[in-house]
Amino acid sequence: MPHKEWFMRFSKFVASTAIALAMLGGAAAAQAEDASFSFSGTAAITSDYVFRGYSQTDSDPAFQAGLTASHESGFFVSAWGSNVDLGSDADIEVDLIAGYTNSVDNLTYTVGAYYYTYPGADGSAEFDYFEAGLDLAYAIDKVTLTGKLYYSPEFFGAAGGDAWYFAGGTSVAVTETVSVYGAIGFNELDNGTDYQDYQGGIAVKFDPFVLDLKYTDTDVKGAGPLGDSRFVATLTYAF
Image 1 (cartoon, helix red, strand yellow):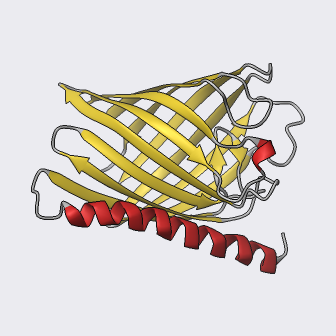
Image 2 (cartoon, helix red, strand yellow; image 1 turned 180 degrees about the vertical axis):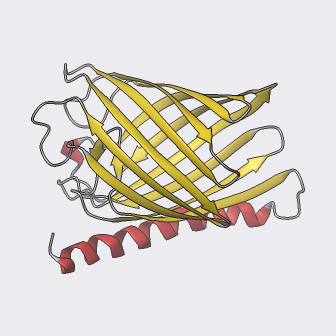
């Protein structure tokens, strides 16, 4: 992609994400004196925004940011954004999330409602969609087992239909700051294009940063440049 075009997409993302985060930040400020609320955020730059095995940025870099407001009861709301390159004028993705998280002994579970929206995209492309999700994490000493179950009644795109996503994985804490992980996901789509995605990598923490290096792939033959195997590097700042 020409540098000028990428810069324009990036600028649009920054503006839209700033608006979304400002709205959530306003709510955060209103509750700032209430000790039952806590607030956190992330800012990241990645060599390629890959979602379930497919590049969302046409193999280009992405800048991503998010903000979360959490209540001591376990309920939370989040806004997250990234630049994308999906065609049909879809240059920005903004995700709005509401959910609940809790832990029982070594098991942590999160249930959430996710709305993925693409401001400025051609409406006929029907990119915006909703998902309900369940995330599980079970810790055994230095090993954490993870599972995901997501459902969308009308998945991404005009030919989307309903969709299920199942995933399982594991991570191992090698040291206090280094962990390795791997995962496999199963995408069951109403349009018949079922596929699997895989990833494995290493995460290195040096507060307040995390450097993540991973390999990702799908089992789709002839997936083209967007779904082919690739290495992805991501640097995240948490605050």
